[in-house]
Each structure stands twice: as structure tokens, then as C-alpha cells.
Length: 281
Image 1 (cartoon, rainbow, N blue to C red):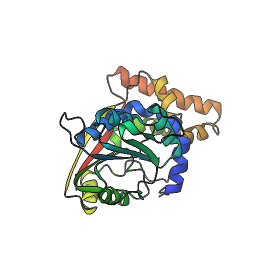
Image 2 (cartoon, rainbow, N blue to C red):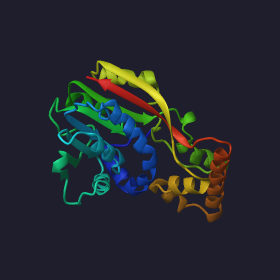
Image 3 (cartoon, helix red, strand yellow):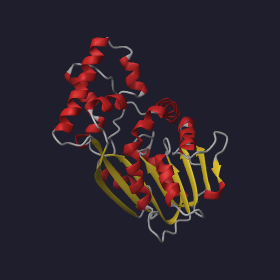
Image 4 (cartoon, one colour):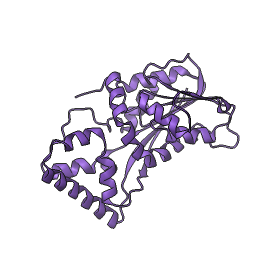
């Protein structure tokens, strides 16, 4: 089973950064739940300092920036240089700047498993769809615990159960039906969907209170053609498509488009189940 190293993840997400922007309509609602878990959407929120780990193209960062108090320190991070640049662009920042002083905000590139912050530096931490991707989720959890002050809250999201997540299983399902091998051997992105397992991992990291649950997030896909354009745009699929005969590719794409259109026609959402973890130090 292949587990990506931090260096490989940095390269992977640099390549995937622009294609990933197409997924922001799904990731933003998840981020809103995470920042709500920190109390940022309350009128009387008193969060003093927030760390975001895995900003992606910045949709969640923008939500947090718009909901926090200007006096609240906020640092956003990502392992990918290109993702950091996209976050800056999303916020209207220049490439050369890494701060919005009037918002007490800064964005930097760093590794979720080796955070460059002192112990007990933050009272809020959130990470959207990152924990299941890092080399060692256990190390990332321990780092989140380390940088939080006593009583601080960390909120995470990971992929839920694949059987409830057609958004990310349709492409492979249709490939299997036509005998198309997509490769594999890498650790499944769904490997942290067991609520008991991930709760114990967070407790083992030191957290005193851990809440875990599943919820479904729909992707606002209008038709199968739109779905195929979005979910075949990633660099891995594009590399595969270049090796396929045109007829094979068109057969695959046609099955994807028709399958999605039929799901929508029958009143089914296209989306993903998300597992949320809210931890108190």
C-alpha cells in the first residue's frame, strides 16, 4: 500500500491546485461547519487565535476571515506553494504579500506534521479534508494538540464512507464496468471513515473530549457533462486519458455522463459523506 511522503504530497498538490478549484463548491460548506465548531459564527465568539491547516485554494480561508473578529489572530497554512498562492488570489492579496495587517491575518507554506509554531499558540484550529491525506494522521493530530492551548478546540473533516460518497466513486465504477484499469495501490482516501477508530486516534493524541459524526454534502452538479469535466480534470486522470485510445476514452466518459444524468433524473444527489471530528484539549 502506497503512502505518500510529505515531499510527494507537496508535488502532488502543486500539480493538482488549479483543478482543485473546481471542487470548492463542495469544500466551502464543509469549512463553514468546521469554523462554526470553533464558535466563530456566534455573536459573542471570543476566539483569540486561529490556525488553519490545509487551506487549499482558499474558500474556507475566506469564510473564516469574514466571520472572525478583526482582533483575532489568524494564520492559514498549506503544504503546497501553489495552494498558498491560490489562497492569496482568493483573498485579493498580491503574490508578494503574505499578510493582511488590518485583519490580523497571515498565510504561509508549511507541513501539517511539522508546524512551525510554539506550544499552546492558538485556541482554535481547523483542517478541511487534509487529515486523511497526510503521511501520518497520528502525527498531524499530535501537532494540532501541541499548538493548542488548554481548552482550545480543533475541528477536522475527512472523507466518510465510500458507499455514501458517489461524487468520488462514479469515475472508478464506470471504469470497472468497461474493464479500464485505473491503477491503484495507494492508501484509500476513505481510510479514516470509522468513527470509533478516528475518535480513539484523537484521544491517543491527548485530547480530553472528542465528538465524531457523519453528514452528507451535495455537490451542485447540474448534469453528467459538467460532472465529467470537473472530475476528469485532475492531473492523474489527464495523464491516464493521454494513454487511452480515443474510442476507449469516449466510452468511459459517455458511461460517466449517462450514469450521473440518470442519478439526477431519479432525484439523487451527487455528493460525498463527510466525517467531522471536534476535539477539545
